[in-house]
Image (tube, rainbow, N blue to C red; front, side):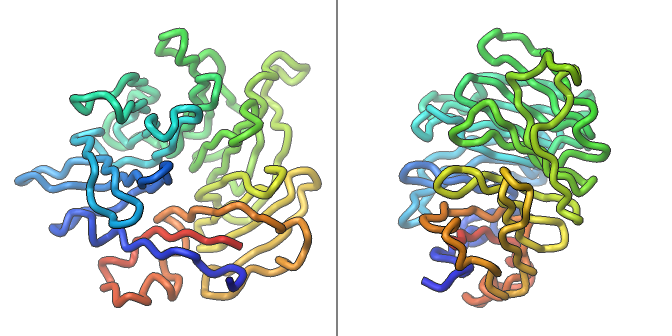
Length: 301
C-alpha cells in the first residue's frame, strides 16, 4: 500500500440521479454505505438518503424527500449498529433517522434555524449519550435528545467567529466534539464541562488550520489525531495533544508528508467528503466527465 493513496475508489456519481443530481455526503455503515444525494421527480428535485450495498453499490433502501433543501451533513449515530443516521440541511433542520423503521419518516426533527431556504447549517452529530450538536451560523447548539425538548440546552457563542462548517463527536471520547469553521479554527469542545470559569465557552483545544476548514474527524490508534480537509483542497493531520501538525497534503496528488512517524502505525481510515479535494487525479482515473468529478473516496495512510 502506498502512503496517502486511496485503498478503495467509489464511483458514487454513477448511482446518483442521472438527470443532474449531486452527491452531498457519504458515510460508512457495517456492510453498506449511506449516501445523501438528489433525485429528480418530475420538475422537483428531492434531497434523499440512499443506502447502497458496499460490494455492488446496489440500492438497498431509500429515504425519499428527507429535506426541502440540499443536505449538508450525514453521520452515523454511535451505538445504533449502523441503523441510525443524523442529517442536517439548508432547510434549517437536523433530523434523526432509524433505518429499521418503515415509512421513511424521521424519528426526531429539530428546527435549529428559522431560515428554511438558505440556513447556514453545515454540521450535525450525535454522541453515545444522545447529545445532538448542530452548527448554526457561528454557533454550536447542544440538544438533549432523550428529553424530547426541541430547544438547545447550551449554545457555544464564542468558539467560532464565522460560519461553522463541520461538527463531529469523537468516536470514543464521547464528551468531546470537534468543530471547524470559516474562521480557519479547529476546536475541540467538552460538552460535559459547561459550568467552568469560562461559562463553558472555552474549547479544550484550538488549532489554526490557516484555511477555512471543511471537515474534521479523529483518527489514530489512540484517537488523538485530528484530520481536517480545507476549502483550498488540502488535507491536514494534527496531534491534538501537542497542537502540532503531523502531516499535510496539497490535494494535488502528492503523498502525505511525515508519515514515517510511529504515530501513524495502524492509522485509521479517513473518509474524505465530496466537498474536499475534488480535483485529485484519482477522481478522473475511471474516465469521469467534468460533471462527475464530485465523488467520494477513502484514503488509508
